[in-house]
Image (tube, rainbow, N blue to C red; front, side, top):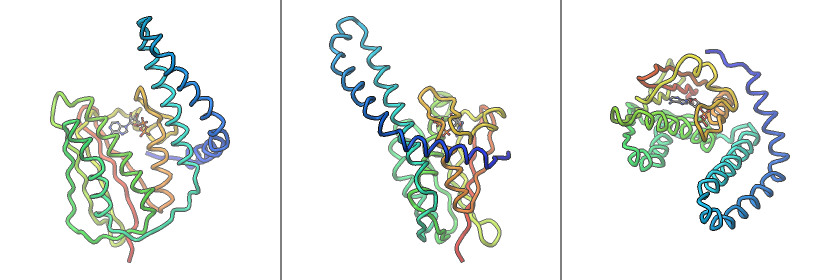
Length: 232
Ligand code: ADP
Protein backbone atom coordinates (compact mmCIF):
# COMPACT_ATOMS: atom_id res chain seq x y z
CA UNK A 1 0.00 0.00 0.00
CA UNK A 2 1.32 3.42 -0.97
CA UNK A 3 1.17 6.25 1.51
CA UNK A 4 1.75 9.66 0.10
CA UNK A 5 3.71 12.59 1.46
CA UNK A 6 0.45 14.50 1.13
CA UNK A 7 -1.05 12.76 4.17
CA UNK A 8 1.91 13.81 6.26
CA UNK A 9 1.95 17.41 5.05
CA UNK A 10 -1.74 17.60 5.88
CA UNK A 11 -1.05 16.25 9.34
CA UNK A 12 1.82 18.67 9.95
CA UNK A 13 -0.31 21.64 8.90
CA UNK A 14 -3.28 20.57 11.00
CA UNK A 15 -0.92 20.05 13.91
CA UNK A 16 0.33 23.62 13.69
CA UNK A 17 -3.17 25.04 13.59
CA UNK A 18 -4.18 22.89 16.52
CA UNK A 19 -1.19 23.97 18.56
CA UNK A 20 -2.17 27.57 18.00
CA UNK A 21 -5.80 27.22 19.08
CA UNK A 22 -5.65 24.30 21.51
CA UNK A 23 -5.24 26.52 24.53
CA UNK A 24 -8.26 28.64 23.56
CA UNK A 25 -10.44 25.57 23.11
CA UNK A 26 -9.26 23.75 26.20
CA UNK A 27 -10.34 26.47 28.61
CA UNK A 28 -14.01 26.55 27.63
CA UNK A 29 -14.04 22.74 27.47
CA UNK A 30 -12.75 22.61 31.02
CA UNK A 31 -15.48 24.94 32.27
CA UNK A 32 -18.20 23.07 30.36
CA UNK A 33 -16.96 19.86 31.94
CA UNK A 34 -17.01 21.43 35.40
CA UNK A 35 -20.53 22.80 35.10
CA UNK A 36 -21.91 19.54 33.75
CA UNK A 37 -20.44 17.81 36.79
CA UNK A 38 -22.25 20.36 38.99
CA UNK A 39 -25.52 19.67 37.15
CA UNK A 40 -25.10 15.97 37.56
CA UNK A 41 -27.15 15.51 40.75
CA UNK A 42 -30.06 17.37 39.12
CA UNK A 43 -29.81 15.33 35.93
CA UNK A 44 -29.71 12.19 38.06
CA UNK A 45 -33.00 13.25 39.72
CA UNK A 46 -34.52 13.69 36.27
CA UNK A 47 -33.27 10.24 35.30
CA UNK A 48 -30.94 11.84 32.73
CA UNK A 49 -27.55 11.00 34.22
CA UNK A 50 -26.73 9.15 31.01
CA UNK A 51 -26.70 12.52 29.17
CA UNK A 52 -24.14 13.89 31.61
CA UNK A 53 -22.00 10.80 31.16
CA UNK A 54 -22.07 11.19 27.37
CA UNK A 55 -21.26 14.91 27.52
CA UNK A 56 -18.28 14.30 29.80
CA UNK A 57 -17.04 11.41 27.65
CA UNK A 58 -17.28 13.53 24.52
CA UNK A 59 -15.46 16.45 26.14
CA UNK A 60 -12.72 14.03 27.17
CA UNK A 61 -12.52 12.79 23.59
CA UNK A 62 -12.17 16.35 22.29
CA UNK A 63 -9.36 16.86 24.80
CA UNK A 64 -7.68 13.65 23.61
CA UNK A 65 -7.78 14.89 20.03
CA UNK A 66 -6.21 18.20 21.02
CA UNK A 67 -3.57 16.38 23.05
CA UNK A 68 -2.64 14.07 20.17
CA UNK A 69 -2.49 17.01 17.79
CA UNK A 70 -0.11 18.81 20.08
CA UNK A 71 2.08 15.72 20.19
CA UNK A 72 2.10 15.42 16.44
CA UNK A 73 2.93 19.07 15.90
CA UNK A 74 6.02 19.03 18.09
CA UNK A 75 9.38 19.41 16.36
CA UNK A 76 9.74 16.41 14.11
CA UNK A 77 13.53 16.04 14.33
CA UNK A 78 14.02 13.00 16.59
CA UNK A 79 16.24 13.35 19.69
CA UNK A 80 18.30 10.27 19.06
CA UNK A 81 19.76 7.90 21.56
CA UNK A 82 21.37 4.48 21.13
CA UNK A 83 19.34 1.65 22.59
CA UNK A 84 18.77 -2.06 22.13
CA UNK A 85 15.48 -2.53 20.32
CA UNK A 86 14.70 -5.57 22.45
CA UNK A 87 15.14 -3.53 25.63
CA UNK A 88 12.67 -0.97 24.31
CA UNK A 89 10.13 -3.66 23.45
CA UNK A 90 10.45 -5.22 26.90
CA UNK A 91 9.62 -1.85 28.39
CA UNK A 92 6.54 -1.47 26.20
CA UNK A 93 5.38 -4.94 27.25
CA UNK A 94 5.86 -4.01 30.89
CA UNK A 95 3.66 -0.95 30.35
CA UNK A 96 0.85 -2.83 28.58
CA UNK A 97 0.92 -6.23 30.28
CA UNK A 98 -1.53 -5.49 33.06
CA UNK A 99 -4.08 -4.01 30.70
CA UNK A 100 -3.61 -7.01 28.39
CA UNK A 101 -4.17 -9.44 31.26
CA UNK A 102 -7.31 -7.56 32.26
CA UNK A 103 -8.60 -8.13 28.76
CA UNK A 104 -7.59 -11.79 28.79
CA UNK A 105 -4.79 -11.29 26.33
CA UNK A 106 -1.19 -12.50 26.29
CA UNK A 107 1.77 -10.60 24.88
CA UNK A 108 4.81 -12.60 23.81
CA UNK A 109 8.20 -11.36 22.74
CA UNK A 110 10.31 -13.40 20.37
CA UNK A 111 13.80 -12.09 19.93
CA UNK A 112 16.75 -14.29 19.08
CA UNK A 113 19.31 -11.57 19.34
CA UNK A 114 19.44 -9.24 22.30
CA UNK A 115 21.95 -6.73 21.05
CA UNK A 116 20.43 -5.13 18.00
CA UNK A 117 21.17 -1.45 18.49
CA UNK A 118 19.14 1.34 16.96
CA UNK A 119 19.57 5.09 17.13
CA UNK A 120 16.11 6.45 17.90
CA UNK A 121 14.07 9.00 19.78
CA UNK A 122 13.08 6.57 22.52
CA UNK A 123 9.95 8.47 23.56
CA UNK A 124 8.64 8.73 20.02
CA UNK A 125 9.29 5.14 18.99
CA UNK A 126 7.89 3.89 22.29
CA UNK A 127 4.72 5.83 21.49
CA UNK A 128 4.55 4.11 18.08
CA UNK A 129 4.82 0.60 19.52
CA UNK A 130 2.34 1.48 22.27
CA UNK A 131 -0.14 2.75 19.65
CA UNK A 132 0.16 -0.46 17.69
CA UNK A 133 -0.10 -2.76 20.70
CA UNK A 134 -3.14 -0.84 21.98
CA UNK A 135 -4.81 -1.16 18.59
CA UNK A 136 -4.16 -4.91 18.78
CA UNK A 137 -5.77 -5.05 22.22
CA UNK A 138 -8.84 -3.24 20.84
CA UNK A 139 -9.00 -5.58 17.84
CA UNK A 140 -8.77 -8.60 20.15
CA UNK A 141 -11.42 -7.26 22.49
CA UNK A 142 -13.92 -7.40 19.62
CA UNK A 143 -13.45 -11.16 19.21
CA UNK A 144 -12.26 -12.18 22.66
CA UNK A 145 -15.29 -14.34 23.36
CA UNK A 146 -14.30 -16.62 20.46
CA UNK A 147 -10.63 -17.20 21.29
CA UNK A 148 -7.76 -16.33 23.57
CA UNK A 149 -6.14 -13.06 22.67
CA UNK A 150 -2.54 -13.26 21.58
CA UNK A 151 -0.09 -10.57 20.57
CA UNK A 152 3.27 -11.74 19.24
CA UNK A 153 6.11 -9.30 18.94
CA UNK A 154 8.82 -10.69 16.71
CA UNK A 155 12.16 -9.03 16.16
CA UNK A 156 14.60 -10.02 13.48
CA UNK A 157 17.48 -8.64 11.48
CA UNK A 158 16.83 -7.87 7.83
CA UNK A 159 19.70 -7.71 5.40
CA UNK A 160 22.95 -6.40 6.87
CA UNK A 161 21.77 -3.16 8.42
CA UNK A 162 18.11 -3.24 9.35
CA UNK A 163 15.66 -4.68 11.86
CA UNK A 164 12.00 -5.62 11.54
CA UNK A 165 9.67 -5.45 14.51
CA UNK A 166 6.48 -7.35 13.79
CA UNK A 167 3.45 -6.91 16.03
CA UNK A 168 0.98 -9.64 15.18
CA UNK A 169 -2.44 -10.12 16.76
CA UNK A 170 -5.26 -12.61 16.37
CA UNK A 171 -7.90 -9.90 16.60
CA UNK A 172 -10.74 -9.08 14.27
CA UNK A 173 -8.52 -8.09 11.34
CA UNK A 174 -9.64 -5.62 8.70
CA UNK A 175 -10.82 -5.42 5.14
CA UNK A 176 -9.07 -3.85 2.17
CA UNK A 177 -10.98 -0.56 2.46
CA UNK A 178 -9.86 -0.11 6.07
CA UNK A 179 -6.28 -1.06 5.22
CA UNK A 180 -6.19 1.59 2.49
CA UNK A 181 -7.14 4.38 4.88
CA UNK A 182 -5.36 3.18 7.99
CA UNK A 183 -2.67 5.86 8.04
CA UNK A 184 -4.95 8.76 7.13
CA UNK A 185 -5.26 11.41 9.84
CA UNK A 186 -8.71 11.08 11.50
CA UNK A 187 -9.53 7.71 10.00
CA UNK A 188 -11.08 5.59 12.73
CA UNK A 189 -13.65 2.81 12.98
CA UNK A 190 -13.89 3.17 16.76
CA UNK A 191 -16.67 4.97 18.57
CA UNK A 192 -14.21 6.86 20.76
CA UNK A 193 -11.22 6.80 18.41
CA UNK A 194 -9.27 9.85 17.25
CA UNK A 195 -7.84 8.24 14.13
CA UNK A 196 -4.50 9.89 14.84
CA UNK A 197 -2.45 7.05 16.33
CA UNK A 198 -1.29 5.46 13.11
CA UNK A 199 -0.85 8.67 11.11
CA UNK A 200 1.39 10.03 13.84
CA UNK A 201 3.21 6.67 14.05
CA UNK A 202 3.78 6.68 10.32
CA UNK A 203 5.35 10.10 10.47
CA UNK A 204 7.59 9.23 13.41
CA UNK A 205 8.96 6.10 11.75
CA UNK A 206 9.49 7.92 8.46
CA UNK A 207 11.48 10.59 10.33
CA UNK A 208 13.70 7.77 11.60
CA UNK A 209 14.44 6.59 8.06
CA UNK A 210 12.21 3.56 8.54
CA UNK A 211 8.86 2.32 7.29
CA UNK A 212 5.64 0.72 8.52
CA UNK A 213 3.70 -1.92 6.63
CA UNK A 214 0.56 -3.84 7.42
CA UNK A 215 -0.92 -7.18 6.54
CA UNK A 216 -4.36 -8.26 7.70
CA UNK A 217 -7.19 -10.70 7.16
CA UNK A 218 -10.72 -10.04 8.35
CA UNK A 219 -11.60 -12.51 11.08
CA UNK A 220 -8.02 -13.75 11.47
CA UNK A 221 -5.78 -10.94 12.61
CA UNK A 222 -3.32 -8.24 11.73
CA UNK A 223 0.43 -7.85 11.55
CA UNK A 224 2.23 -4.53 11.55
CA UNK A 225 5.87 -4.49 10.47
CA UNK A 226 8.09 -1.63 11.55
CA UNK A 227 11.39 -1.45 9.77
CA UNK A 228 14.25 0.52 11.31
CA UNK A 229 17.89 0.96 10.39
CA UNK A 230 20.43 -0.65 12.74
CA UNK A 231 23.63 1.02 13.91
CA UNK A 232 27.01 -0.26 12.74
P1 ADP B 1 -7.76 4.91 16.46
O1 ADP B 1 -7.13 3.80 17.25
O2 ADP B 1 -8.03 6.14 17.26
O3 ADP B 1 -8.98 4.47 15.69
P2 ADP B 1 -5.50 4.62 14.67
O4 ADP B 1 -4.90 5.57 13.67
O5 ADP B 1 -4.58 4.07 15.69
O6 ADP B 1 -6.70 5.40 15.34
O7 ADP B 1 -6.19 3.40 13.89
C1 ADP B 1 -7.05 3.63 12.79
C2 ADP B 1 -7.95 2.44 12.52
O8 ADP B 1 -7.18 1.34 12.03
C3 ADP B 1 -8.68 1.86 13.71
O9 ADP B 1 -9.86 2.57 14.01
C4 ADP B 1 -8.97 0.43 13.24
O10 ADP B 1 -10.11 0.38 12.41
C5 ADP B 1 -7.78 0.11 12.36
N1 ADP B 1 -6.80 -0.74 13.05
C6 ADP B 1 -5.60 -0.35 13.57
N2 ADP B 1 -4.93 -1.37 14.11
C7 ADP B 1 -5.72 -2.47 13.96
C8 ADP B 1 -5.60 -3.86 14.32
N3 ADP B 1 -4.51 -4.34 14.97
N4 ADP B 1 -6.62 -4.69 13.99
C9 ADP B 1 -7.71 -4.23 13.35
N5 ADP B 1 -7.89 -2.94 12.98
C10 ADP B 1 -6.91 -2.07 13.28
